Image 1 (cartoon, rainbow over the protein chains, first blue to last red):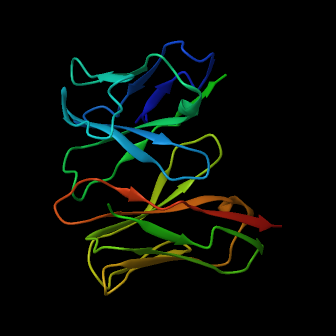
Image 2: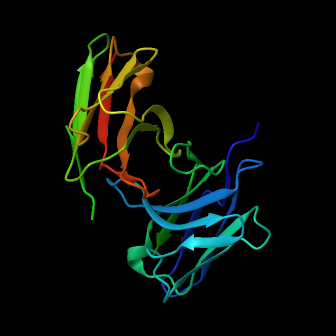
Length: 115
Length: 111
């Protein structure tokens, strides 16, 4: 069974440019998460989807970040415009749906460098 | 918000040695999870704990959910070079689905 797929794996952009990350969760997983991981830190949740609905986006900086999961399967996270402080690893995770006890499976992440 | 203190921050050990790391929380959790992250990869779940006092093993790994529900530890026995990586604890409290992660313990194993 394929795991969580993310692309690109690496992205280097100049500040003020837009950038987008793509995630395809494990087949059948209804819940999808986007996390931010800064160097030397654990992942921090940005947004959680239940199917196509963003049920928790309270940690998403909405002035520059946006996300969508139009058909309830794959998802895109966008930053526009990017700032130097956005350099980090962006992780996508998915789970079957019972979020209290189930397992979140992480993708390999996209490492973003903003110059 | 919830905060996790994970220690030690890093460890450098010889192959074959046992390892212990722990996490403490400022608030009560009802789930403790331990993940391992290799360079350039996402975290992979090692052990999940759902009950205070629970002791669970996965091969050479053993983790316990503290009876106060505010702490957990992970032990690795007879370490091998492939144990190298960053180990994260994560907790979840109450009816909140959200995971709070520790800052990680960087483990280096010298062959």
